[in-house]
Length: 312
Image (cartoon, rainbow, N blue to C red):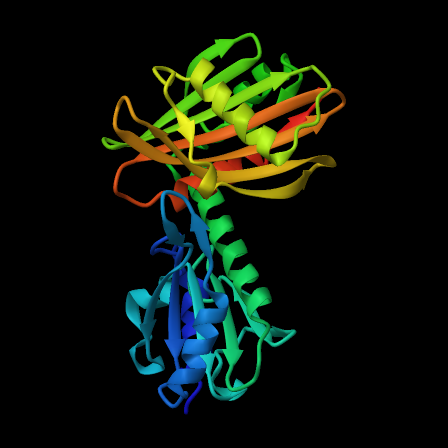
């Protein structure tokens, strides 16, 4: 099989490459038609990631084409994964590392291109980690840079939060909703039927909570600080708690489902519970997007909350 005439394509792209396009979580699979379908299915099963919100949601959105169909706008996709039967069938410009070939900006700006060879046995955890990092990078760029024509990061908000003893880079697309002693909330109306609430709660009582206690604290903060949420509860059967370390601070990341029987609605949330020098912090993203996907907004919360830093 010819190598897609990549040298000529790269020469053309170098002079007029535009920005990468397509879904932020999309992965275009360019699959060698000679591959064993069972081997391809096994690879896809190994790299599939899910996040549990109101229901189990896939992280990646896959689409496929053959090398012969790989042309036009398909070359501009944000993340592309070549799955081939021989290294000779991979495009030029990819560098091998541990069974995975990779390259950036091959046909478009901000693009990530990967390649694996079957039936070789690429590490699925490593490959899925690279694909997730690519997704995170595209979402971060969109959230803080490409959202509108002006930069979405808000240095003024970083400065204002520093007066409270911490910082977090909250995009300008979020409006300030509440600023009270020990509690701050920002909101973004992502669509007519989609509301995101980003909250920060902190208490200097020196307590180190367990994961179950962290869930209870998150629930009490929602009931006491969120608007019209006195009946909110957390579905404890669906909460996932994992240990995290953010800039040297220990804590937990919670992901789960909230519900309100009074308003007959429900949604997803994700929280960081952090403990630093006698102060415990709750960083929380609550999502209302009825009967629609929540995973992209959970990840948006992670990206923003990952900018948190205590101190001045």
